[in-house]
Amino acid sequence: ALAPRVAYAGARHLVLAAATRERLSRLDYDFERLRTLMLRTDLTTVQLVWRDTTDPLVFHVRDPFPVGGVVEDPATGAAALAFGAYAREAGLVPEDAELTLHQGEDVGRPGVLTVTLVPGDPRVRVSGTGVPLPEPAA
Image (cartoon, rainbow, N blue to C red):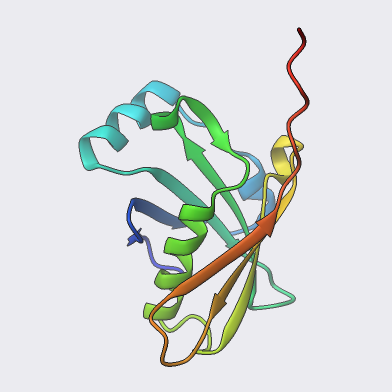
């Protein structure tokens, strides 16, 4: 039901579904090859998504971000925004919905992003929490 698609909300994010949560947890890719592809196709992230089987409004996501110089972004508001627009346009969620996106779990920096959709309002609202980074050593 989660067809591959480039979602856009100011930046382009390729949405790809994982068949299982376990598969999503096994992120492994060639950093330089993906970075080259993303630069060539003007992608900011690849948003890997698994829809929770117990709640259709809960998603687990991972966001490879080699164009930003990191293997994975642990909390990505811009991608969550684009995903909310994608889910609404694809009819995957009700017009009036609050989606929960769990991100960063597999890199030890769990965060929760909330995506709010309101009927008749084209805007997508994103809020959330993450795990702060420790202060760098002096």
